[in-house]
Image 1 (cartoon, rainbow, N blue to C red):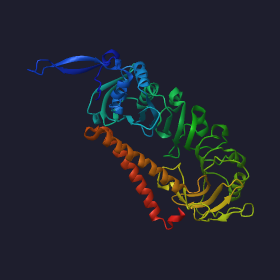
Image 2: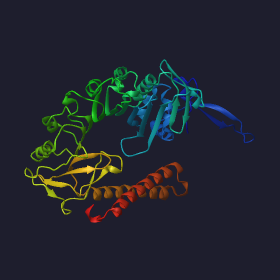
Image 3: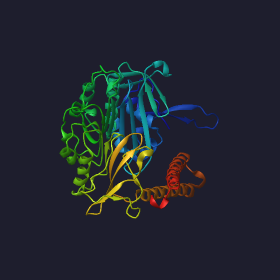
Image 4: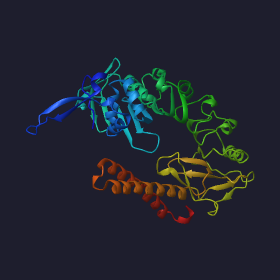
Length: 445
């Protein structure tokens, strides 16, 4: 069941779905239009109706009346999980994930993508947000494509509308080279704070002028959880802005002193360029050893591949890896790529008086880094496989329930989604097991 808006839909018009009924008598099947007020259905029934909508159809419905939609979405338990807004090139992208209820359930997503040329759009449908008119819109799968004369401004209008209907944490991606007016962007209340900020700058010409350094950016936006800043920063900045972030990646940290490094309260930290020596990093390890900090998971220091690194053995009782005390591979949950499994067989370990183990090692991969890793779980791969197996068993039980309770009247959509999710979990587990098999010493994982 879907809804496709035309060029002009008012709030009153969209409350009515046109259904067709067959006239009585059995002689003919003339279709007679009949008005049916969908939003007057009981909430339980209305929730079932909305669960049959695709994400992009839910977005289309929201353009009819923001006030109406906020009430309806709330009554059926439809909420947003997260928003992602990307200004990575001249044409922004907005992506939203919504779901019903707070537990694990059916998730839908929709995307609004601005494009350069209206010739690439095979539709002339119109969406309106207050006084703003978006012509040349077309829909494909879960994405609405739109050509707009000022895509940067258009993205703020569209996201303001989506955020009012579905308030949720925002993940913001900014390529500074692609933004015409950074200050105007952050004047928008919806962009003035975010859960995660990923901001970077690519120097294309030595005469390029950077609009703002990291200090200026953080004066305009309040980051709650994660910051990845690949932008220049020459002078010392206010550490209070970044001290307690969960994940922190800074390109230019030459301004950072050793006491400032000690004061960081993040779980995952990465300093790409800095002035810390091997003695400073050893002091950092000693400071952790003498503390009661149980939050830190990983601290990464960029390192010149031609520089040697040896931790100060005299200060702490560093030991070579013992397979009886911890696994060989450390699982880095801050990484989404294949590099999230770190081989620590060559690392040196220290064990704090409270039993917490940390490893320090030099990693020569695509980049050279010094890693300080804290083992909150000394057998992370074993734990992960157990969790994946449990999730797969849960999906198998759902499949059995559908087949057993519905028998031949299986709802195709529900079965297909459950089966697809179960298959994905099976594939995930298979890949994890393959990693074990490919490892020289399986027992050391």
